[in-house]
Length: 400
Image (cartoon, rainbow, N blue to C red; front, side, top):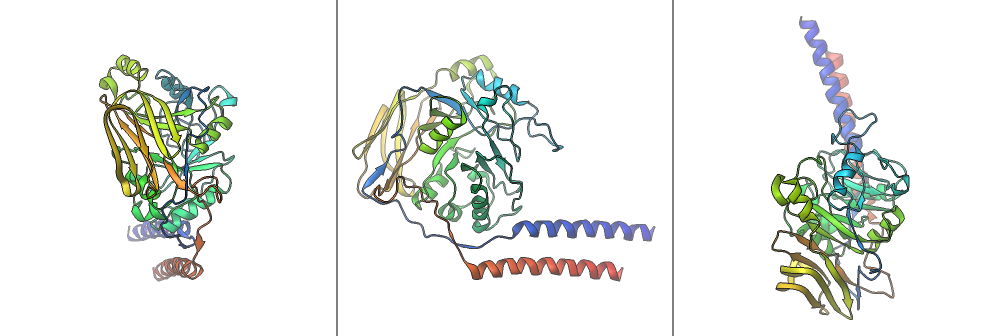
């Protein structure tokens, strides 16, 4: 009995040691000397709606959706197949539905011309997850506990090498994602908005105020299409000629879209939910005239707010279907949020200062500088820890 117990303990100890070594192996990373926060500057104002073509209708879209999948994974994140999820969204009037399963490129259920290669990357229990668009293969390697901003940056850099663009998912629900991280990280084009923590999108403003420009998408992160409070709660209205990937990509990288939070109409009354989703308020006009931003809505909002540097309210209009804001020389950026009496909320993409003689946009995805000394010290420490674990394991087994 004692001998059997010793064998069991040895096996458990070996499994624990192997698991710790695996975790350590995923943590190796360069250490960056991040650029200091630098607010947007310049005489020009970037208009994300500069390519808005009114000949195309807004297309209601959702990009962060999980489905049941075939393949090697023993656990599915949804019990609904892609066709079921697609059909469920079509009932609400969605025009574009993409399937972003974890570490899986999911095929369009019936039309290969509508295929969008997008997957949610990340195994980390910290929930540092990203939507990777346009990649032909899944990159599986992922730091399991990316507690350093440098580890997150390394992952963004790796994913960016063979993808068209990247979205950082649910920053509010990512452990360890704080103001410092948002002021440091670059290498992404989109951030997920309104991810279950209110309508303020403060983390977006942390990044924008530090000079990290990005567009915003609001998504359901759907796992269950048959529960009313999970589906059709967040969406985006994209101005593009078709639901094909090349058109979607051009619109998402150009900024010609706005995002929306939607109440759970009827709270289980599906007929009411379907009907009310067909009657949503819309953006009828948005853009830039000289140095004045404007937004026009199809219905009167309780309030429309222009938000700028440091999450500061630049202007507030009440009981109105339109608002203009003239950007002052000291305004680094501005974005609109409209709150409606029915509980709907509309978010615009940000207008930001830049110098058109140097760049064609305020995006700055230049590589972050690697600190060689800190990189050697950090990875050397990880290597030493791994060696100590192996030595301890061998010593314990030999002694037993």
